Length: 123
Image 1 (tube, rainbow, N blue to C red):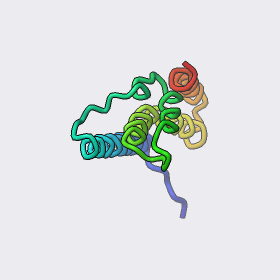
Image 2 (cartoon, one colour):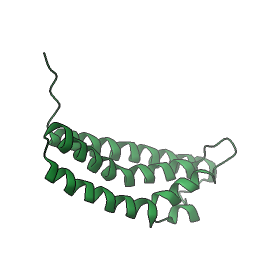
Image 3 (spheres, rainbow, N blue to C red):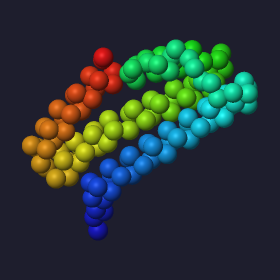
């Protein structure tokens, strides 16, 4: 008995919905924690204006000595939100390569992955 993989649409939906849900939970937790500490929802911090994932990941180092702060949760939520489509593209590329053996679509999604890598990390 062989186990069949779910269709690509189900996989894409699960990745996108899971990433969005995790992102919302992290952002709401960070905003709630900020409201409890400061009494305001003003989470204005220079690290949150970073334009790429590398900048957001560097903001983790700006957290409290214990490593966890409202800023870290907000940064993690934004990073998860940015990484969700990237993970979806990588999953689609692996799906096309190994399950469907459709190398043309694998090459196209590989090109999209390269562009997303440049936009998210290198820019």
